[in-house]
Length: 217
DNA sequence: TCGCGGATGAACT
DNA sequence: GTTCATCCGCGAG
Image (cartoon, rainbow, N blue to C red):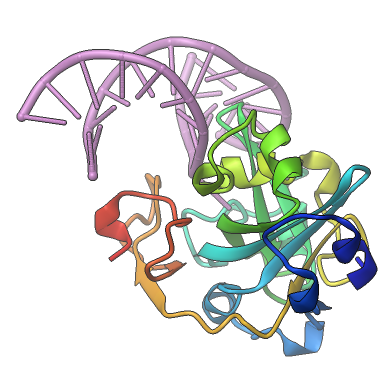
């Protein structure tokens, strides 16, 4: 993604004089620990480069899935589906849930350790029309509120499983220096296993966070 | 604002 | 055959 590419599109959400300077996250800068990484990713940007343009959203909700965690797909060892969770921190793990929705995760530990962070919701910032087309005209507030919606809005599917999110490519994660948000914490959403662990993080007060109101105080 | 049920498909036991 | 970290539309309160 180049600044020029952002500025050539005449979208109201980012004015020319405030064009974002987005830098890819460096692997060195990532927190070592999965929980710290889930918190760290709040406020960072997901950049999706598509033939029709670039879609960008700010991460406002994440969940940590630990190596020692019954709710983590890697909990019972590596399988063809979950092998991306065992890649060095910063790789995409994408899978289909309930036959209808893709989930986008980022691997979070050293190579060989299966753990990750689920990206649950974005504040749409740029390429909103692109995302709305992918979401059948949904309201902006609901474009990427929920993990399945997030993946749909960014056209993320299994083809992006294993992609390095810290390298140039179709999908990467960056920072624009404005990510200092008030971060709340709660139990994770929708789980049947290990449902009591408070491993969900969200930007307090953001209307783009998913889940019932009691879980986003 | 909430809780419910159906649609959906791939991986795993 | 079972499981799964969801979405959507609907109806109750």
